Amino acid sequence: MTPWRCTCWPPSRRCGAALYEATLAVNPGLEGALSNYGRLLARTGRWTRAVPVLRGALAMDPQSGQLFHSLGLALEETGAREAAAACFARAAALVPENTDAHLKAAHNHFHLGSSAAAVRHFRAVVRLRPDMDFVQLNLGLSLLNMGRATEAASAILRYDRMVPGDHRAASSLGRCYEALGDFRAAEAWYRRSTELCPSSGENFTRHACLLLRTAFDWPRLPRRHAADPKVRASVIGLKGRFGNSILQYAFLRAYAAEFNLGYEVPEWVGRYLFDGNDPWPSAPMPMLREEDARLEDSLARREPRLYVNFDFDGHFCYNTASMARHKGLIGQALAPHPLIRPLLDRAVGRLRGMGATLVAMHLRRGDFGQEPFWIAPEAWYQDWLAAHWAELERPVLYIASDDPQILEAFRAYSPVTVRDLGETIPGADFFLDYHVLSQGDVVLISNSTFSFTATMMGAAQRDVPGRRFLRPDRERRCMVPFDPWDTDPPQVFRPPGR
Image (cartoon, rainbow, N blue to C red; front, side, top):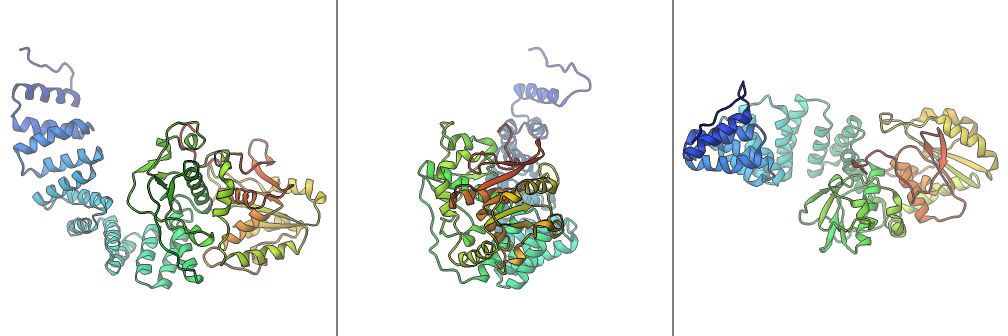
C-alpha cells in the first residue's frame, strides 16, 4: 500500500481530513482519530459527513461532552433540531460548566416549544454568566410561554435594566402585563415598543390589538379552524405593518379561493377592523418562504405546482393582476366591521358635505426615506393639483400624513385632516385615514403599501366610473394613473429573481 502524503505546505484542513480518512482506512477503530476527524468535519462546515463520524466516535467514548457538543452542532446545521437539543443537553450534563452547551440546548428547546427545558438551561447560563444580558430576555420569553408571566416580567425587567431602550423588551413586557390582566401597564409598554421601533409590525399589531380589544364590546365568536388541505400565513401582523398585512391577507385568501383550500390567519388588527371570523391557526405547519417557491406563478397558474399545507412566509408584493379575479371576495372579506362602520360613515359623510369631489392624498414621511422607501416630493402632488383642481366639481382635499408640517405646502387648497373628522378609533385612528383614502374620488398615494392597498379596497368595494388613482413615478418625476388591480405594489419586498 502506498502511504498517503500531503503535498501542500502548510497542511490545509482538507489535507487533514484526508489524513484522518487514510488513517481510519487502515485502523477504523482508532478512537482518537475518529473523534478528531469528526470535530474537524464539524469545524469546516461539512455537517452531513460529520454526523455519522461523530456518532461512531461517541460509540467508543460515550462520556465525551465535547463529542456530544460537536454532534449537536452538526445536527443543528442539518435541521435535526430535536436531536441537536438532546445532544447539547447531554453535553451540558457531562460538563455542567459548559456555558455554550447550555445556551445551545436552551435555544433549540425554545424553538421546539419545550419551554420548561429551555428555562432550565437558560437559568444555568445565568448562573454561569450573569453578564450575558440577552439570556435574561430569552429566559423571560420562555417563562412567558409557560404562562409564568410574573417570573417572566422579572427576568425581562432585568434585561431592560442591562440593555435600556430595546424595543423587544418593551414589547415582551407588554405581553407579560397583558397576560396578568394589567392592561394599563401593558398598553404603556406596547406604546413604548412602537416608539422605540416604529417599523416593527409585531409592536404595531400588539399595541393596536390590545387597544381595540378593550375599546369595543365585540361579539363573542366561536374559535374555529380550517380542515385540510389548507394554507396559512402566520406572518400577517408580524412582517410589516398595516399595508403589508393587507397584501399578505389578500394573497392568502386569493390562493385559498383559487384552489379551493382552507385558510388560517393569526391575531392581527384585521380581526377587529373587518367583518369576519377567519379560522385560527391550529397544529404547526411547515414554513414556506416566498423566495423558496413560485407562489405568484402558482396563483396565476403559470406554475403547475400547488403549495398545500404550508405556512406561507413573505410580504407577497406581487403584481395585483394575479389576485384580480378574487378582488370581490377580498373586498368583501375586508369590509369594515359593523361596530366601526357607523363612525367611518359619519367621517366620510362630513367630507362629502364639504364638497362634491373628494380628493384624498397620502403623504408619508415619518420613518420613511431610506431606499427602497423613497419619498416622493410634495412638488409632484402640487403640480398635479395645480393642473387639475379647476376641472373638478367643488373639490375638497383630504390629506393623510404622519407629518403635520406638510399641510403648509397645500394651504391654498384648505386641506382637511383626520383631526377635522370628529371621530376616533382607539388603537386604530390610522384606519380613518385608510378608509377615506379608499373612498376618494381622486386618490394620490405615496410610495407606501398603506395607501396602495387602500386603493385596492376602494376599487373592489366601490366600483364607480370615473374614479382616478395616481401614484408617484420616480423615473417620470410626476404622478401617473394606475389600476390598483393590475400593477405592482411599491417595490419594497420582492423576493430575489421575481
